[in-house]
Length: 131
Image (spheres, rainbow, N blue to C red):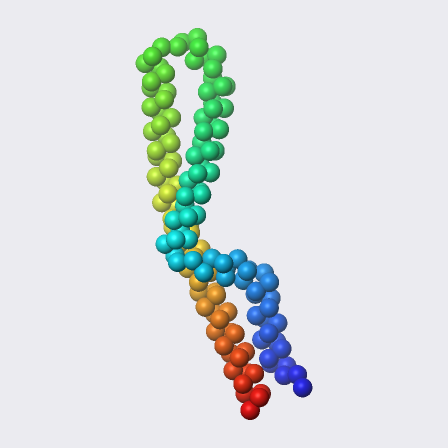
């Protein structure tokens, strides 16, 4: 005989597990520090690649002006400006991504905790029915 309350609970748990639950279960399996650090490394890597591409496009776009007014002081000041902009962007990106991934891990951890509590409730329903 089917217990309607148990079936509804099972459907709710299955919906969570099929949508957001798969990713959140994976996220919550990591320690917070490991998850944040690994994602920050990937984020910094991709931000660096994007910055290099953008800097190369700017240099190619302004190449004619650079070749016309080329001097060691101008080239040095441009290189220092690009390095300073990269450093500022990197520090900002590290702070923001650390905050984002900590929050994402905390949300996933709490949702998975609720999911596991729901599984315990479902198990209790099965035990009650057996008795």
